[in-house]
Amino acid sequence: MRFSVIIPAHGDAALRERTLKSVREQGVECEILVIGVGENLSASEARNRGIERAHGDYLVFCDDDDALEDGALKYLSEIIDAEAPDAINYAYREVASLDDAVPFKRGELERFDFRD
Image: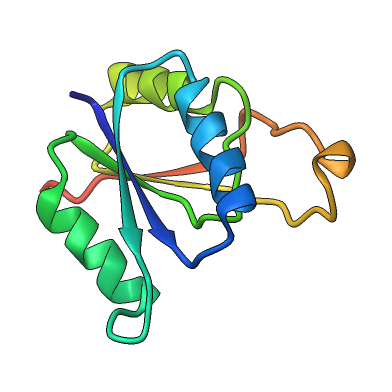
């Protein structure tokens, strides 16, 4: 499996459902790990638990109030096939509502290669 999407869940079910829908509709096979955040577990700890349980070759981190743009994982997959980077840092946008979202520009990625 290429991607494991790790989502720390803070409790807002409606926002989380939007996040899950945006991941499910990517059209790319991926594993989704939703890890509950609570009194005894911070968001960082939830991400770490997700990392420990993930089976994907690449990890994607989303918060439960995020949404992936249509085709985001497919585009990341194309970058991986073409360049085989060790890590990719992609841009994000804060929006008041999905109606206000600005389309993602494909060039807004940083690629990292940690090999010698």
